[in-house]
Image 1 (cartoon, one colour):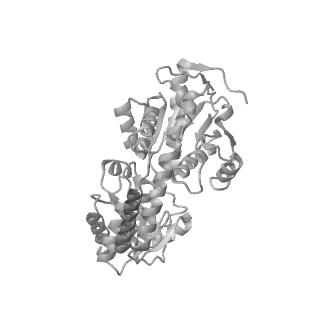
Image 2 (cartoon, rainbow, N blue to C red):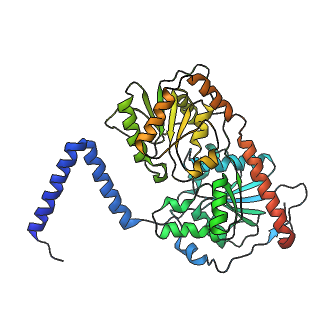
Image 3 (cartoon, helix red, strand yellow):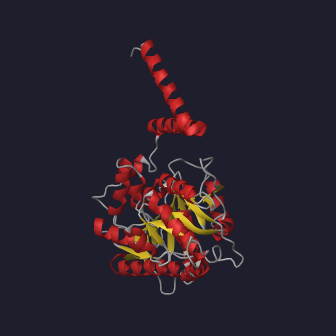
Length: 421
């Protein structure tokens, strides 16, 4: 390959003029953002690792499914369940929901085992400490690398984990705890199709909300039941001395489905219209922008409840399944503004949520409408009361019922002897 000095000079000149142009219109922060994005794109393109092992993909022949024996569930005995999950970070939303359900099942007598699946070969002891400290899990913790013990149920909890669950030869009925339509997490390509194939593995779905259950049944012929979201009243609640002066934005630039860029443009527009209203951003550290806001970053639930109680409304966008954020806001008397979509209306199903078309002017107008509501205090109290009876205990009971009834129904034809112990 030959290099021509005049070509190199031309390219350097082009890049220099481009950086000057960016600096003129977006400042030094714009230049830094472009450089980081270019570097990140180059690194990802050259070194991306799929979140599922190549050997597991090779082993997963969907035309030849293993039909696992199901141990008898003795009368009066609670099931033994193997949960296969990716290593969590503290306060991960998906893991928070998962471990809420696991803790509830433990209170009903379940023996829960946790198996990590991690193609990055992270340190087991480090993540074991996280699930014990941050998720209050006191059961067995291991990796799937050396196989799993027999159980009544074996549960995949994210699309990469479905592969080791499919390939495993341990006993136990296969379930799939589905919190979102994960093929949407990736551009159309290898990862999105590998994720989609997990819905063809013959597992019984347990989905967060009815939208996912309907989608999996209709598009993939997958058996699925759903549970409704709960509200954590121990963490999120209306405070009697709340003084509201702002609006909140759930800002997650690292999660494409949270439409961060769309939300930022809407908040910039709102800031121009209502400079008298405080802006509170949380979820991730954002850094400086062209308009003022309070950058909370990733904060604990107790502090987040204080933020909600300082705000009239909150912007929570989700282009896939609904998030837990709208219920948190409602519990604190903060009115959620949500992008209007069938999946949001079907899953959230609450009269105090405001839906707006997903474009900046409409989202900013919806925020303004709440801020200028004639009797906000009454609206806030009613919104908080609307989720008070919606508990995670109810969601846990539904999952308990799904697991027991499905095991019982399948075990009539495929059961084997009981699990010792």
